[in-house]
Image 1 (cartoon, rainbow, N blue to C red):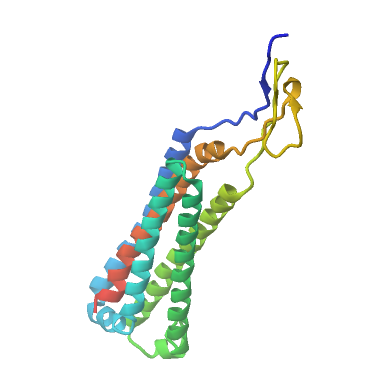
Image 2: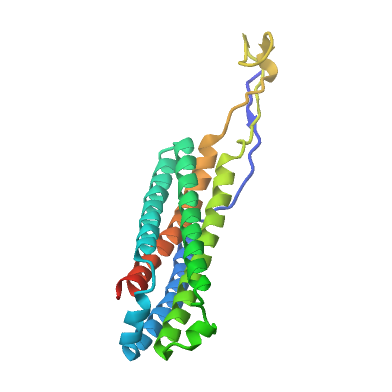
Length: 244
């Protein structure tokens, strides 16, 4: 009897080029959003230069610098996670991805304490303390909370996406079954008891290669989004923390 091999495989339609194009279009819409906010900032900055300069002096530059270093580090680990997955090192990619998510969490924790300190001093929109100050300072803090708040929402979304991808990469690989026909010999399968006839051998293996193949395009798209979040902060940091 001739040997026949049948392997059940799930057909999954993939369009990596289309997904990457869709991500670039989405990032372009994000640039339009933040570009409008930056334009609004520039208009009011030119109208109230002195008030913006004075209000920026109340922000903690050390916290902003720390958050900048955190996000720059997360961009590095994100790029390394993608490179590791491309090379087939799934374990290293998982660790680097976990570090990236942790860096995003550290950024949000620092932002929480920074906002809490400002709110504790009454420096938030429509507060009694801020209403007593100049119109320019009110505009500055309005833009500060709006722009850093929208950016913080994007960081949280990015953390959620990366967390989902990390769980997908860490899940137990699906097992495949290969049925073989008659053969002239028998084999001892690892982990099995005794000798198993080659007439019906079940070969069990971990499909890390499949996870890597499917995971690279998804992780690359998520990396593009995360790098955009980092680049946006690179512009927000000097606009709010260094103008004083």
